[in-house]
Image 1 (cartoon, rainbow, N blue to C red):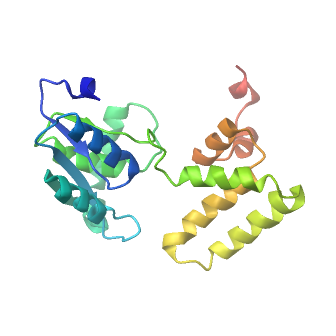
Image 2: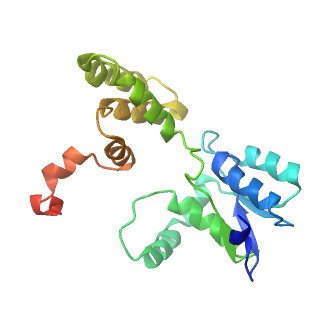
Length: 210
């Protein structure tokens, strides 16, 4: 970690309060990065907002903490300019909506630091990995039950769940439906916006040739 802290420009850390960014923060602090500058984005949707968790960590370590509260209405007002800027920088199709909050928090951080440390997926902190664990256990069920009935029951139940759990239930149903796939294929299908079978129907076979 010490090598990553060698810099001739000010360093900061995106702090969500979850496992990944908090682990990066911990090791940076232990390696001697002081004072620490941390940056967090807050939302007006409670199931998206992690700013309270981030604040607890920042207060414990007494960082110079910067919070950007981004109500949905404010983001929508700034959306055309943000999308135009992102399209120019990516210079290719990019369908991950997380680019939007990343853009807004990066714009704030740039007023204070030049480089940012991050750690997405380095410490297995995403709920995605829970789905893979369930998929592994799910394979023990008879195929007719595991591949059809259980996923369909979860997907049907999702419509009656609050919004904070609805999407998670749909994701779980998708993972369980595809639980017979190899791990790398399961991860690809889980992260893809369009399932592989759908792509095979709409794209030319030449697209899939090595």
